[in-house]
Length: 304
Image 1 (cartoon, rainbow, N blue to C red):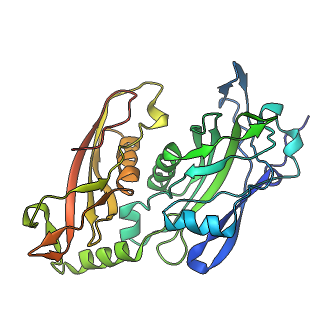
Image 2: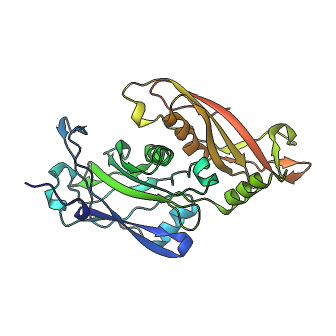
Image 3: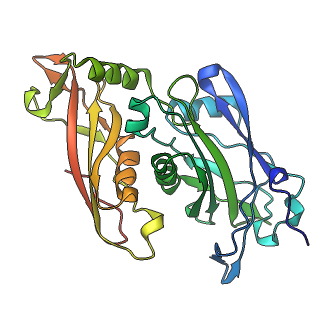
C-alpha cells in the first residue's frame, strides 16, 4: 500500500469569531517519520494521520467555546482515510473538553512578528494528548507555545465500535500581530502592550496595591510531555499583568531551565483569574513576576 496523499487525509473546521465567520483550515497529513512510533494497544504502530466524521458542534457551541477562551474542533474524513491503520479509523472524532488557544509569545508580539506552526499529535482513549511533534515552525518560540497548548488540551476520546480509541491529528497555527490570529490577543492585552511602549505609568507593582492579589482561578502548569522521558526537575520565572478585571494578560518567560517549562507556565498563567487589583480604591493593572518549580515528571503546583 502506498503512502497516502497527506493533503487528502482530513479537514478541520474552526470558527473565526473575530471575523464573524467560520474559517476552513485544511490540515496537512502527518509526516512520514519512521522514528516516530507510538506504543498503542500493546503494540507499535506508525500513525500517519487520523480524522473522522464531522464532529457535531453547532455554531452556538463554537461561539460558547471561544468566548471562554477555548478552541473548537470540527474534523472530517479525507479521501485517503481508509488507507490509515485500522487503529486510527474512528466512527466518532474526538471533541473538545478543554482546548485553550496557544499563547502568542510576548517577544514576538511586542516586535510585531507573525508566525506559523504545523504540529501533529495523538489523542488517546483517556482524552489526553500524546507525542506532539512539530513539522514546521517559523521560530522556536511559536513552536514551544503550540506544544504547551497541546499538552494542556483535553478531549472526549475518539470512538470505534462504541469504545474509546486513538486518533492522530495535525493542525496548522498562524500567529498574526494584527487581525485574526490562532494565538488571539485580547483588546485589554493590546492596551497594556501599548501602555508598556509608552511607559505611561498606568501599571503598578504588587507593593502598591491596597491588598495582596487574591486568586480566583489558578490551575497549575502541565508537566511538558516532551520532557517526560527523562523526567527532569525544572523551573521557570514568568512575568504577566493582571488587568482591571482580574484577568492575567501577556504572560512571558523571563528565565527557565528549559523552554518547555517556561511555556508550560505561560500557558497556565493565561487562564488565571484574580479579584480585581486596586490602588487607592480604584481598579488598576499590576505587574507580577513569579517563579515556579517542577518536580521530575509531575505537574507543577499552583503557587500559593
